[in-house]
Image (cartoon, rainbow, N blue to C red; front, side, top):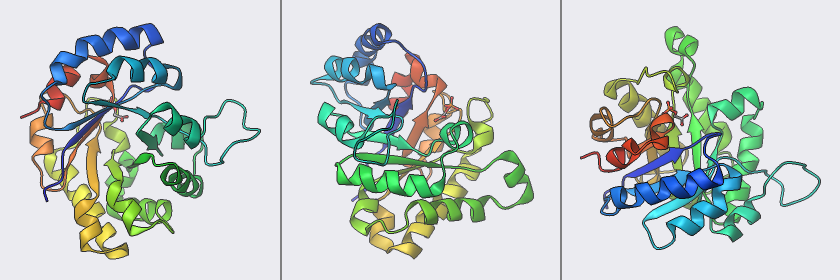
Length: 249
Ligand code: PGA
């Protein structure tokens, strides 16, 4: 079974609820006949308007973060149970901005992944190296370390269903896209790492995305790589251009 492509938008801290509804109504006709799965990962306050305005369409809604506890005294946080009850299907975990600005650790991410699976959410787990790490030649070691710690104790069945996004930090929001060879090299290494920890079947099932300055001009070449199953798109997901990325062929 070939893996179905998936294109997920990461809106980050952009779009008000009213802007969400207006954007979705423009996007709907552009993605109607998409072959790929289409996901918008929106700010928490936009989840309900996004769900309402995408009802009956192929667009699924994702969150950008969640807490690893079931509930409790965690002011400002949102739980996996809240997301899944609302109708959210995906959750981005471990984006480099959260790792850097909010000091998220691999240990916390491991707990978040387990909680997401418990509630039937599909995690989009992000990993990626800095420019310094790339220049030192330690990219693959670093990514393998992130994957191994984040997935510790998670079952093969859960991993087969999840999504991993390779996002080189130097390519995020910079316009400096990784070349398709650079992106494929790391995505392939991630799949090999999954085969090592689990088995070939799990590695063949898990969908691996590239993220970092994906746009309508480079999506087709990136997504044509054998180990790249689509993209996690930041800046370009805020524009109608996102429709073109979804229909990249
Ligand atoms: P970008 O962001 O497409 O704007 O580079 C990607 C991301 O941060 O997920």
